[in-house]
Length: 168
Image (tube, rainbow, N blue to C red; front, top):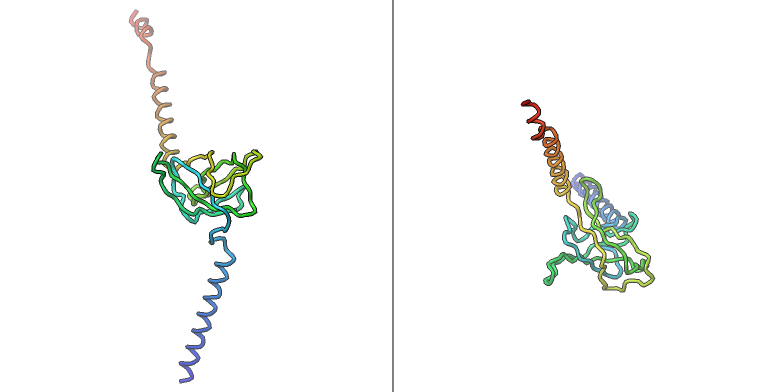
């Protein structure tokens, strides 16, 4: 009987430590959405950006992506995100969707401009850069290479005047 009690007590201690560890990891991590004011930006392509992704300036997390939807008027993707209350952004700030490395996740990179007027809470950033997908970049590279090969083939072909001279 005392052996079962000891095993149960050890199991309970392990569970308490595991719960404490998870709580500590969650509270010290940056997984939680950032509290602050919300802004939005319109993109033609969001390319893998999802709610919960980071919003960064200079690599420092200052916010979180909150929501995505389609604008019914122009069919562009609208990204709603939060920014910390202590960070005020100029109206000419550029929002760009960037990759966190070759195979990493996406995040929203903000590049503050130099305008004197600051964007108000609930405002929309006008300057945006769409996400570049790896597939699009590879497609462009392959297209450029194939175009280069076609130009090389045309250079190697003899001209009509050269053929006449060869016959003489």
